Amino acid sequence: MINQLVQQLIGKALAVHLIERDDEIYARNQILSLLQLNEFTECEGETNLEIPDVLEEIVDYACKKGIIEDIFDEKEIFTSKIMNCFIVRPSTLNQKFYENYRQSPEAATQYFYNLSKNSNYIQMKQIRKNIEYKAETEYGRLDITINLSKPEKDPNSIARERERQQTAYPKCLLCIENEGYAGRIGHPARSNHRMVRVNLLDRKWYLQYSPYVYYNEHCIVISETHSDMKINQETFLRLLTFVEQFPHYFLGSNADLPIVGGSILSHDHYQGGNYEFAMAKATDDWSFEMAGFPDVQGSVVKWPMSVIRLRSEQISTLTDAAVHILTKWKNYSDESLGIIAWTSETPHNTITPIARKKGNLFELDLVLRNNRTSVEHPLGIFHPHADVHHIKKENIGLIEAMGLAVLPARLKDELSEVEKYILGKPNAVADYHLEWAEQLKHRLTPIANESNIESLVREEVGKKFLKVLEDAGVFKRDEEGETGFHRFIQTIS
Image (tube, rainbow, N blue to C red; front, side):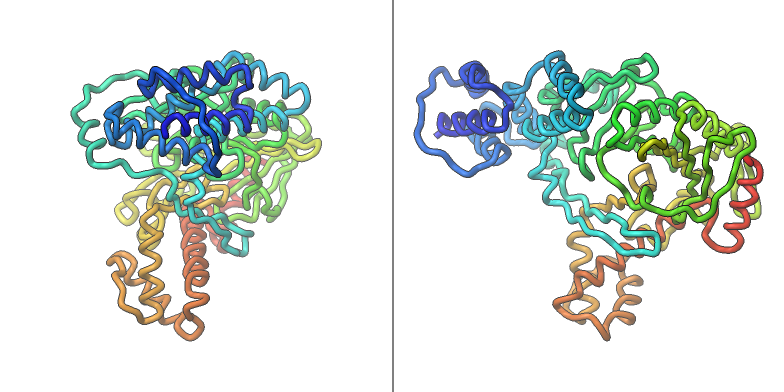
């Protein structure tokens, strides 16, 4: 049975060009070693199982034979080691990437993306479990994802993690030392992890894909050094230089301050990919000019968050204009709108930038952020407010700012209970959803039925996410906020 599984796995790897025919025996022997087998017998017959399914059966065998413990982390590490038997070394991968690049940037990234999926580094089987849909709003179609892809750790893994002696290698999940790292209890398996070296401003950066992609070709571009996130002139120039090299991708950075920044502020990195978010499709609300930057087109975007869009054919000019706006914004206060730049020595204003290329024009979106807190809003004044925490409480980072909600897995079951509540069925609605569920029942009961209740509730979740983005906007889209936005634009014009 195990010989047949190994043979099936190798057959699948050959079919998707992870290995060539000349590599078959070598890969087989590497896998046999991991499985503590000393011989192999050719088997007949094939199945329709895909690579992740074959891997699961091989891992089950390893658990039953006592080769590994039947706990989440051990199984992930073993799976990664098996797939590493099929993947070329980083130097060869980079050579092939740039051979494809000579054909086109699209061919290069498609080669690397396919390899990352076929090697099970991008775990497509898990990702397909996510609930994904679009929500219609006045700002376009927002993306809603209920994130079910990342498996929850079992109690044994958690207990082992507590007992294990802590180590600082790699320093974080983004460090380049993760490439090929076996992993350990509490640190994800990375034996089958590869990175492409990319030259940005004469420095080496590293391109990889997210193991749990949220959109097409969701990539991460990582600094070679473990250094803090920064938004400055080099950031803008680096983002634009990247999209010049890969014009079919966008690239953006999380902000560099707590609350409004991403989850990992200790390692400078960007996120991008081959996808057009609702914010990228959003139209100009109104335009403006900046003295000293005649080659730059400026506009305020029709979007629930506060976004300035700059366009130019020249990267250097566009970068200088962005630095001008960042400098003004970092020291800008408007107390009538709750915008205060500094509290003593603590800064509050920063920017989330996103770069893309459209035809001959480079485009840079600057999302204005402020991370100040108050007694009324202890998690952040320009952060999701308490009335939406039952749906989304976490920071609004780059991906959310562009219009993709990454919502917690708990909502899969919780929204089902809300649907039952609206239809008057027995239910177990969570306390924190009860007020919302009652409002929906009052409003939707006349039109709700078994066939449409799911779509109705999903639409309401979309409205909640829109409210999340509105909360995060520093200049609200009302008369007072728009007047305030005009006041700021006057300072940069």
